[in-house]
Image 1 (cartoon, rainbow over the protein chains, first blue to last red):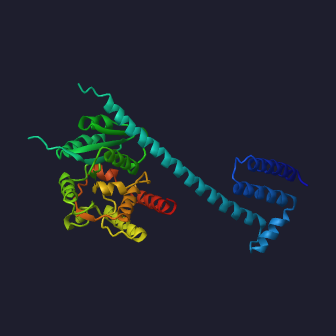
Image 2: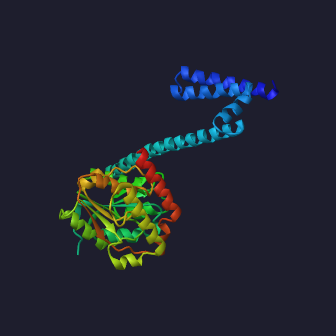
Image 3: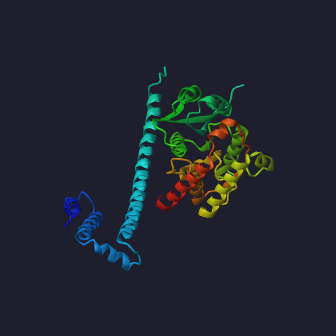
Length: 117
Length: 231
């Protein structure tokens, strides 16, 4: 094994343990946890046997294993960015509700402070 | 001559850095005797100070949330204050008071639940719209028709008059400019009589500067589609 494989596998094992820990302690949902575990396990296998990515790529009509990995990363990142956008949108909506409530409370308070003698 | 007051008619005016023109616009709206609600949407200029001189109904968003968010704040506030008729009016001085009063009378006479201003019903007004703006607005109306099936000539006109029943149907979630399409969808989803009313728009360098560009138009479309799909 090369030095890169040692470092890569060690990192993947650490991430794998973190993901398992997140699932056990329910810090992360079951499905996202399992997806992450799958990613790390596949990473370890690919590092141990680099030819496996090429075999997989060839089976779906792609020439090089690195290309297959690139396409997968692009797809995962696109989905990830979009889900983050939706989450941010939800937070913005909640923030707007807060700003709205405050503005209405403030106008009521201004009214209460008026001297009506 | 004193202006008669109309306790139950509220004009909602969202304002974001409209200091240069707001005083003039509010003074004109005040001649109607309607209740004026200004929502200062996080302005950094004198918008609040100017609005305070003209109305006790000043609501302040402590950060900018967009025109849609400000409109919904105004609608919620007006409904809580017993509004029976609610008009939405742009702060940049592009609408005419006479058009708003006519539309209020339509709703008051129960001829419709919602009167929506359109600058495309009158040929003279239509021809006065700058070409780029006219094409953009036509595209917006056509896309709105394709997406939601609503048949309006002017999907993005800020002058609207709603009965209390119609205003209760409105629950805007698009904080930014896509609210203009959302409000139409929500009105058409209810059991309401909706009419378009020919209005004139007074285009000035100021109001054109505040208007939408083509890139803004694409952003609105993106937000509108996302809100239709994901709520």
